[in-house]
Image 1 (tube, each protein chain N blue to C red):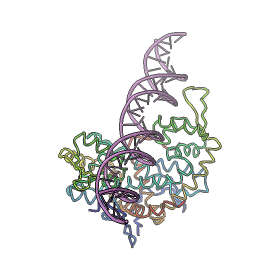
Image 2: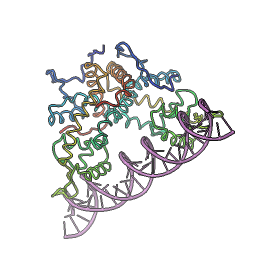
Image 3: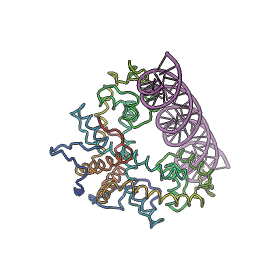
Image 4: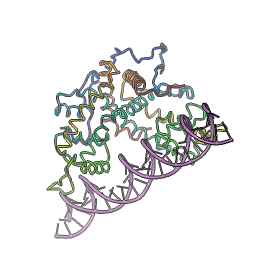
Length: 192
Length: 192
DNA sequence: GTCGTATATTTTACAGATAAAACACATGCT
DNA sequence: AGCATGTGTTTTATCTGTAAAATATACGAC
């Protein structure tokens, strides 16, 4: 059932207890219900967390694209510029790759593009001529500083569907999950 | 109401200050701290939710790849096969696209590949010759049924870093967020 | 019946990511 | 100095996804 949904019609009157609610009105709940009908012996518990995280991420990223696109930036590009802006100093391509969780090759390409657009500049290291240093241009810094408030305002609007307390609870639980995942999955660098 | 402050774990251990003190050990917290140092006037609250959702999704998907790859499947491929398996009947390419949240073109390509591998079959509709119907072969069904338990076991192991109660709280909060996002997303598209 | 429009699917062109190889250089050993 | 080995970065080949155009077909108005 529920397959071809036109509009999920989330006309949910009351405040949905948010407590161990397996059968809410989101698409993941419908999927889980289908699986349980086909394989009643399986524990579908993890799906309700992981499936929802994935689905939320997909929806939120799609939403985030909106203010970014107005600035002519993709999200990976903004992540790169943002890493330079928030650290406040130059970064090497390798550092940028680690900072933005993407491959070195992807970073190389992005740097090339952003350089052509005049948003970042590169210079070679004087001592070790293998390494390059990338920094924001004035235009790049201004772009980030202009986009970020819009981005945050948009995110705030999106998250306003949650009560403030719920939002904080969610942030806390995700922080716990994330810090343990990051610790478990081969230590990634922590903030200097 | 959500409340359920029962899990003491990830909260800000040091922060007695009213402000959320972003002092946890995950990478997102470090990023947020950097942004606050550079732009103290901005409300970075949304980052702590959205950034963590994105990062969790990235890490979890990477983890999920492991059991799937053993079966020679990518996640989008598994999603397609899973949609056929859990609905229990044939689906058209369009339905599959909606069910797996991907574009029609992507579904076309996946169907072609999976057909070549003997995991799905297509047949034309007798009445409306525009539409096709896709169904699992026996091999496809067996593959899904073989992979799914491994997949769930793996996910259970990954999520075991959370206490059961925390996991349920998280699922509930994500369900609330997701159901509202899915309901509101269309209407929110113009704001900024 | 024929025409215009809507719908379902596929094709095409292209942007973007990754893995693996290639490259350039540094560093340490002898 | 000369060479082996390791590291930082870029290139190459390849793959996947998407947007937009193309294709094929149904349906309704006339």
